[in-house]
Image 1 (tube, rainbow, N blue to C red):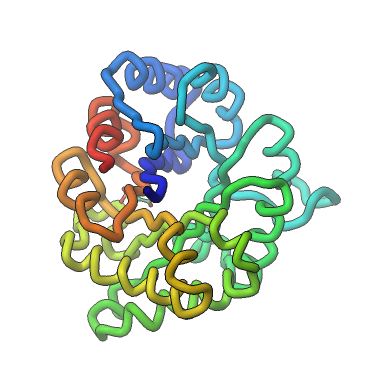
Image 2 (cartoon, rainbow, N blue to C red; image 1 turned 45 degrees about the vertical axis):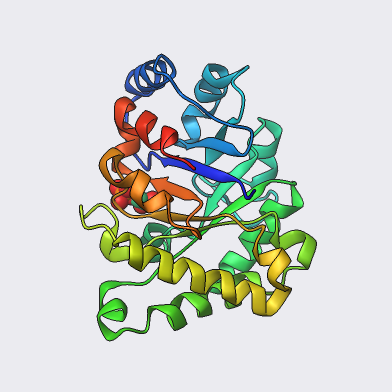
Amino acid sequence: MRKQIAAANWKMNLNQNEAETLLNELLSLPLSLQAHQEAIFAVPAIYIPLATHKLTGKTNMYVAAQNCHQKDNGAYTGEIAAPMFASVGVKHIVLGHSERREYFAESDALLVEKVNAVLAINSTPIFCCGEPLAIREAGTQNAFVETQIKNSLFHLAEDQITKVVIAYEPIWAIGTGKTASSEQAQEIHAYIRSVFATKYGQPVADQISILYGGSVKAANAKEIFSQPDVDGGLVGGASLVATEFAAIINALK
Ligand code: PGA
């Protein structure tokens, strides 16, 4: 079975005490992760050592970065390179979140470099894609997302693409409380899988985990994750509440 993943995206939230309290609370709750299920915590980079320490010895739980620079090192003040994350044990890096595309002008071409940088350190890119409201209203979301995927991922070989996790996040559903219906999520997830099947073949496409993101919470996770092509979620706001994120982890299929 494909990996089913609950990924927390803390974004730029919490001070260190709050981060520690959240992890303590979450880990004190009953969490059932089966062999094919993972919980991933994309925390602010400064809390990676803390989160790594807290998750030591926990099975199928990983700390992730929210972004990395495309170069391995150099004069890029304030940036963090993929090999630096590798050196502290990070195995997953979120790339191309819509907030980075919007506020930091990350282009499809830049994301090619970042994807390559993450694969080069043997880590998993959690590659975000998703359309703005105007595109959804025009009904052209499939073509929009297909272009994002083709432009940033289709240079990869078959043995590389299976290392990538996709996070489909409609921008109109992020942080808005508006969730795509489970039918809408299933429809575009199936489409995304078909895009990979056309390029790499169905057996390869069937191995790729495709997460849904956008106002996932305890109350809707089970319904969304139950869709056949939805392999878990990338969760912002609800990942900052221990009981919410615990329920989301436990809603994985
Ligand atoms: P949200 O954010 O769950 O707060 O909508 C999701 C995301 O941006 O990854």
